[in-house]
Length: 261
Image 1 (tube, helix red, strand yellow):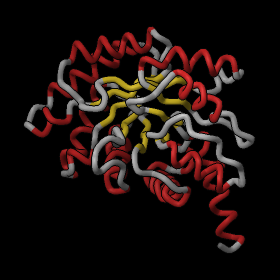
Image 2: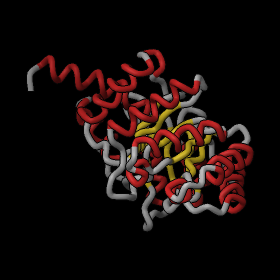
Image 3: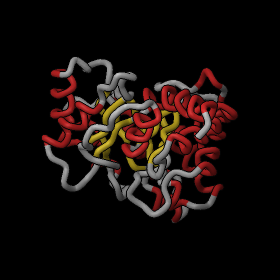
């Protein structure tokens, strides 16, 4: 790799690292593993925007970040209605409210995408609206599972419904299905955000593994939304493998993983 390409990747890595949601959403997660995940958030190049963990580990994450003097610097995100995206609105709203009460700063809720596939638009809009109310001041990210919706028109409609319901971010995927984030789906979400005129961000999750991958998504976001739009308040990556690759691009050692998305 020539020097100019190396410099380019390092610039991308420095831009992408503070946009990361460092994630562990595994069936075998433990308190010790989440503590390890939080320790990985401290790097010589700065910190990610958030750590993302199951609701059972929100308290552990907050406690560990405080001990590391990262409270207020690294947010704690969690997931609800995850990963299957059911349509029990009240149950999902309650789960989201409880997550915030436990200390979550951000909630990533799965949109009931199967209802949209079946022609029902109202359930998705209402679920997001109820979760928006349940989350209060916490950030609400809505996972649209774009790889399952497949049809560009359905992806666009899911994005519009989530925005109408009060989503703070649109998120591509759970990372738990065959097709997760793609540039094509991400462009549809960005275009929907732009058309809405609302202050909504995007989270690209699942399958983004390399600094080169991150570079492509950042270039897309810059083309659609402009350079100044790309901040932790508007753009996130959800992928622990990417975090490791960013550190490698910056010439840093990679710590043992606490878990991967």
